[in-house]
Image (cartoon, rainbow, N blue to C red; front, side, top):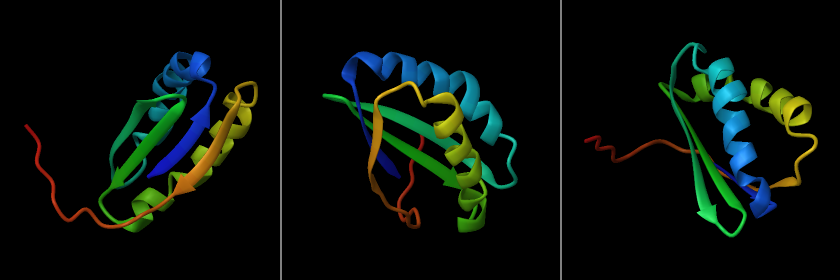
Length: 93
């Protein structure tokens, strides 16, 4: 999980770039299980990367660092929190 602060006026552009550029880059990574970006309001974006094991999630990190530096450099975005752990409860509809 990552939490970012971004200019609220740039949230739609962030979402577009993540969907169009970042997700395609990571979706074929071994063990990749899912990626979510949540607009939490007031310029807060929360992302979740899911993988079959910690190594699968870690393998997306280099791609994420490259994506932020090359594709988001013109946006006012700041990572304010990061956490990781195991999923202990999961339910899909």
